Length: 462
Image 1 (cartoon, helix red, strand yellow):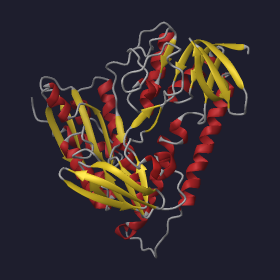
Image 2: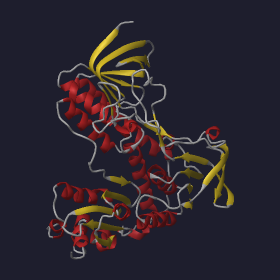
Image 3: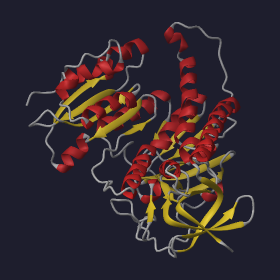
Image 4: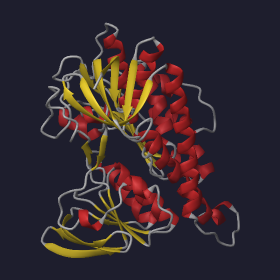
């Protein structure tokens, strides 16, 4: 079979891979992008954007339930999950169409099929439409992502549990959804499904939610779950699962010395991610893996094989689309002779519960662990007057300030539109502005950002 030659081949079309392919294609290079199923990767198809679409529908449902609080009488309403799903599907179709158009406009050849290395920089592609092609790239970029981890718990796989992909495709509201895992995905979808009308129980192995965050964050999220009527089963180990998700499931749980059985109708697994590295033939390509199964890379995202890079989650990068996009910039610039690295970059994040949790830089837990001295400013979200007009006063925001200078070390917000508020602080940090620049800024009233003036006015003196 003839081997087809390309200058650049990307395996996967996720955030980093697609932008690299489009950029190099527009430069006139011969580029092929191999994609098994989801054109554009997980973000526009099954993860970030679809989940936020469904979460917003749940937010609208929550407003219906609170309507009398806003002076609006109602006679009742019902949730049509098929319509929720169809709204999400339409958005996904539109996004995929945009991606297909971008591939065509950039001159990149999009090859739909499953790839496997047969030697250094050589791939055999089993085409979705049938047949096989052999592809060789002068340079290869692997961006194959991760999938939901299904742990080796007796009965778990046989229960056919839902993943985040399946939940976003539900045409019904589960009567009682058990969520195995209280991380980002678990918390976001638990709250959304509760707002659609499900009874929801979160089962998590940690002693507290968001165990890597400060205790006040964990307390805020716990209170959020209590407010929403979500049951929490913490510090829990699942020893066995019985039944089939969608009908009836039982989780046998141990908490310390006590044992219990949790019963529900549906089960969602949201307890970690596993890299999609199996079956890719990476060993014959000279690409080594870490002990956790991620592709081993250096700070330039170079693998152990010459002229082969890995990008995004499969390379062990923090599991955020915006980090995968930065991975693209690193490889793009280094291919052009630069020397960009992954070390030392900012890693902002936002948990899209309602209210949102967002952070940039150090939190108190990390500062204490590293012995970094700081001054703390903290205010309740109710001190931000815009939250009172919205009836969204839950939460707080806080900032860590250096003790010897006025440098902002970190910022955490648990409040309405927290991700947007964090962005303003992050830009100040990028610019190297002292906290006093935000404290003295003339910010529009009444906006959520105006709360930053209140926050930074609360910084203790040096």
